[in-house]
Image 1 (cartoon, one colour):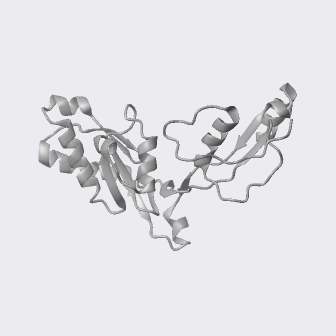
Image 2 (cartoon, rainbow, N blue to C red):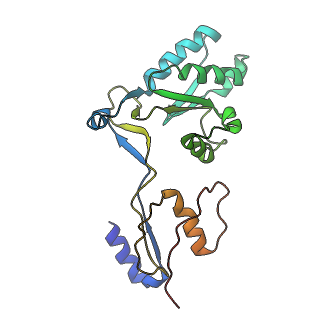
Image 3 (spheres, one colour):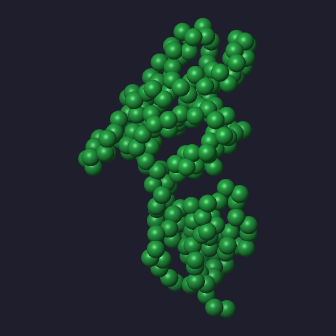
Length: 220
C-alpha cells in the first residue's frame, strides 16, 4: 500500500517536491501471555468488571445514580448531568472514583482531570500524559496501569493496550531537500514534530519537549 501510494505521488510531482516521513505507533497491543515470555509481571485490567465494582462502591456511598457515561483506554467519563440532578458535588464524586481506582490490582495511579491541571510530578509518563490531555474532550478520571498490565474492555477480550509506552520506533525521512544520511544516535518519536517544524521554518508547538533531529540538507 505504501509503495502504491508513493508511486501515485511520484506521477503527480517530483521527489524533490515531496517530503516523506514514515514511523510507527508508540503503543503496543499485546497479551499478558506474550509479556510473560519475557518475564514481565503482567495481568489484565478489565474495563467493564472494574466499572461494575466501582458502581457498587459509589452506590453504597451516594445511592442509586447512573454515574458513568463510559470507560475507554484509561479514561473514565462520569455522567455530569445525573450527578448534578442527584444534588452531588461533581469534584467530590470524581475524587472518590480516583481514590477507589488506585486500589485495583495493576493500577499504578489515578488522577481526576482537575488534578491533572495541578500535577507537578516529574515522572515522564505522567508529564507526557498531561501534555497530551485535552480538558475539553478527555475523561474525568485518568487511570494509569503498572508496567506490563494490559487494558481490555471485557473479560473475553485477550488483546489490549499495554501500559508500556515505547519511546522509540523506526523513522525514515526522505525526499525534498534531505541529503542521503544515516542517523546513528538514538532519537524519539517526540523528535518528529520539531524536526518537521525546523525544515518548514515553523514555530514549535507549545507542548514540545524536544529539539528535533539535526539533518543534513542537499546543497543548492
